[in-house]
Image (tube, rainbow, N blue to C red):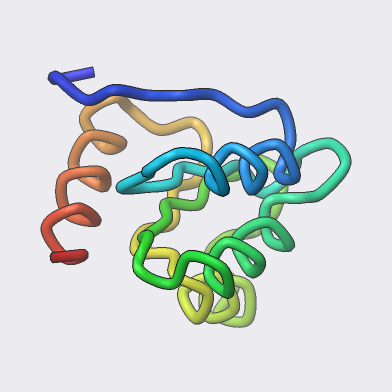
Length: 102
């Protein structure tokens, strides 16, 4: 995607494990994931890698709720996307999140 290198994890715990051994500039995480869910994974990622911004997405959790949005942004989420979203919306969130992390 536009010159970005991406990696994929099957679960939140796989994402955290991948980050322990690899340099990562940004995390794009679904809220609903097997084993360790996205919110729990983002909380752990924020604790272990506080400088890495995150984009959260979901089609099942009401992301517009202030409590959910506030919780995720507290733990490093720079953007919150509700499914379905367009490639343009994702790219805009990626670019904005990376620009804000420097």
